[in-house]
Length: 266
Length: 72
Length: 103
Image (cartoon, rainbow over all chains, first blue to last red; front, side):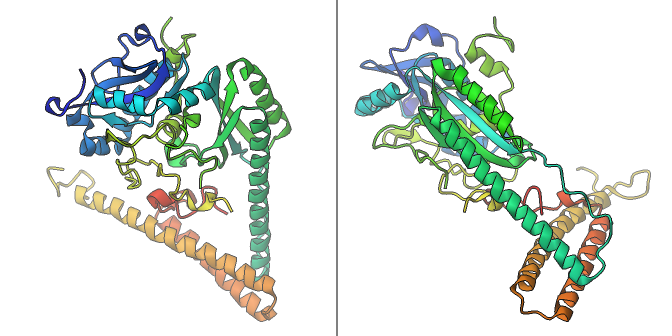
């Protein structure tokens, strides 16, 4: 049995599913050295692995997650397990959800079985696809060839460029909203995430849309066609399509809603 | 077939250079959160204290986004 | 850093080189704040001008001051070897002080 205070280990949960097969997870590495396993309760199963609290206890984990290299390692390892699990319908857990022991996990499954079953039903046969839209590096306004001839001229030029910049921002934002609405119309569910931090993405372009869409697996091709059509008709936007993802952005369970269950980021 | 050219989606997710930002959006910002018998959950791990080295935005949806990107 | 003040072959010490980095870091911080204020002032000036309660002389004077300020700013950045994109203040969860594609 995993976990237990005397053993200095905890149980890291990746995802919840139904009728999951052990063989799919055989030899799959987890976020720590222990391999992935299943904890079952009824027809539900939690995909888990044991973690050493020396490295995954509260303080240690906080330090690790604030180190970009360690954060990346843990995030990718967690994500890989989730994607493997997503071969079947699953509800991903928020990263770094750690339980005392197997029994606690089992209890959690039993207490929330109705909610999980409903959530699983919502994502069954569906995938998440991500769409990001950036402002195309615009043909920048031709630089001033002459210097301002007076103080008043300088101010007038500033006024013109500020107005143009504001207008451009407003138009881009409206365009991104329109794109989101169109894509949402082609999906079972849609959700916006906050714009990505350029320091983390290394992308200097202005991000106008960061959204996730829940699509019937059989309709993925149609969705991609819609994205392609949007690319053609919205030349001032650079669109990026990612996926298929496990249904991360649509993993909400009834009343015990996930913290990020709102459609729009505030 | 395993490795970067795997046709297996899960395999590809490990080998393919999926952008870390895209992964973080999902593993940090989404997913089920259940209180109770949890030893530790991401909400406890105070990621609002953005280390300048970590460069990770706040995961709390109520947290502020970049100043210029706040929606009207 | 074991040998704090060991001279290199150019005569300057390693300590001096670190101080230059520190100065550039501080300059970048200060100049970013100044640049933010400068941009805010320009926006405010434009709004004042649009409001229509200023005389032509006042507009001219305001414009000349801001023009001189912009010029001064550019020269200060040059002095420190800082470009526009070098300027910024990272406020962590609050993002950056200046917009990513400023102006």
